[in-house]
Length: 191
Ligand code: GLU
Image (tube, rainbow, N blue to C red; front, side):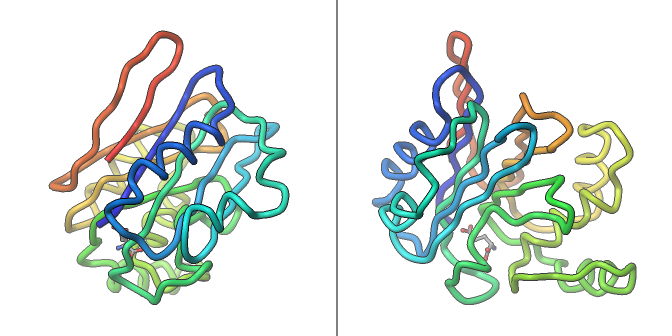
């Protein structure tokens, strides 16, 4: 289990998210990543190793969006790698997920989703959550998240973004720590 940061406000999300990840660095981690809403699309950047490696990625400085989620990973399912770093997304980049914890029944869910035609790019348990969101999504994000939670077993803190709701970060937790910081015209998420 490692770190989650989320931000919704008027500042550049990239700055807040990277600073948040740096504050969580002491816990140790193997990779880091973030997702920010840019022009109503979810832009994702991730890298193996230190937060400094993420911060050094070409183009990251150009991210101007004010809403995002970020993650430092301590691998439980799948080796430390760029592909396995979070955020994990669905195939159409409509949903982005950061997760601390373990989805115990991920194999069962993955097998079901593969049969339904989904393809997976990572070895993580977390990717099943992104794909399940796509499986259940019609138009209501909270309903969709509730359906996904009824399927998954285990411990989790989840930060979730929907491309169709670009001003909002959704968060849920079970057994894994996650808090919401309520500010003036800005809100935060941290594990
Ligand atoms: N189980 C997830 C993974 O292996 C999350 C690990 C974490 O809590 O950082 O990707």
